[in-house]
Image 1 (cartoon, rainbow, N blue to C red):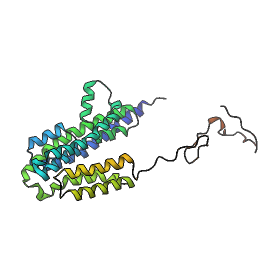
Image 2: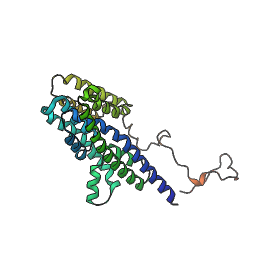
Image 3: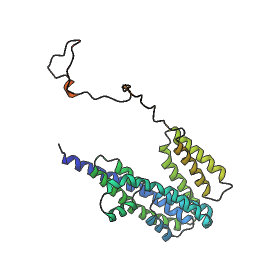
Image 4: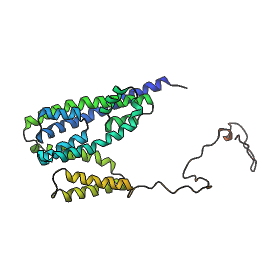
Length: 274
């Protein structure tokens, strides 16, 4: 039986989650705006990056490398930002069925397909609530992120040397905050440690930005070959009965005891419908 109230409840819950995530994510925009100005970009260049690129991790990577290496590190900065941005294309595969609509709607959805909109959408229980979660989150983050980017850029320009206030570490702090919850498995921890070692060793000998790209190859190699990952388990033996530890078998309704009915005597065969 359909539950219209349930649909409305899921719809409202998705909208609230999207707005909450949008407000929380927008706070990072202040750090990005200030860091971007500190790296040598002006206010309008900073705002243009947020408006067009709109991918927090890629934006932090871009201005972080520019801050360390200047204009000479531009190619490495662009390569690092592009590498991080490829994940949004993978998100698009998951969100395409949620968005629906014509080409213009898909174009708009591509602009706001980010970590937050994808996560909120996929966490919802119904198609309608997933669609609501995607659009509300994406639009909330987009508006909030661009407004706080402008605010952060104005603050950064007013402060002058943002390094004196520790804002030069904002990019690294943001990445650590995103990475930390994912380090619960052995493989994820091994990737993080190995990539960090590679980056530290190569930093003195390579131009800014390149150590990060080389370290990323460590993650690709470990993920591709599933080193230290959890195996899928042994293949089932043909003809063998499934183990109760592998699955819970459903009990047919016609063999469940009826309240008030006498139970069959020991050894009595119970007939069931096939």
